[in-house]
Length: 251
Image 1 (tube, rainbow, N blue to C red):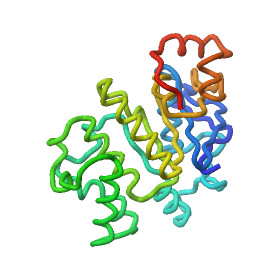
Image 2: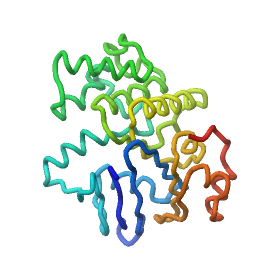
Image 3: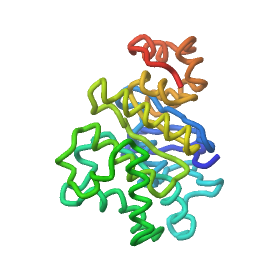
């Protein structure tokens, strides 16, 4: 697996918010993490991203425990694992032009500069369905859906192996939501990108992920193929989630 948790636990004070969670994502795979508020999704996302360290268990990247002191490992991690956040309005720096925003990972990771970087930025923008003329403009000039496309371009410009997506379509209207889901599907088909998607919305996960992990109170209560969970959930909690969703075509 590229990225995984092994028996991971995490507490806020006396409250156990992640308890014995084990799962991972392999090359080209898409895994959804679903559950209601308080299920532990956001904390697990932070553990996968390296923003927090588990109290128990481990986070592994390419089979190695995450270690901030291992500079070579962390540089590979920052190149290979990129993120798209929920809110396209707050995730882009309003003071920066789009070319600077999309190219930021290339500069910060030392991947490319100058003409080479400009070419990679233009390629990334085209890959998310935008014209190159957006590059000289600013975030406030775009709709929410366009901003999320720009955020996705920034995430894929370094050609990562894994995309961590935190509620990537929940802030969008229904039509735009479907368009962004189709964009992510297309990027996965074309690049082999692995995806871990955190969402309270099982319908969005069903449209993008072959496998789903159902969380409740920081624990995994059900795990399996997305189609299997949709068609025959084994737990009452998963049945409640499934019964509440409008269906989108499954991945």
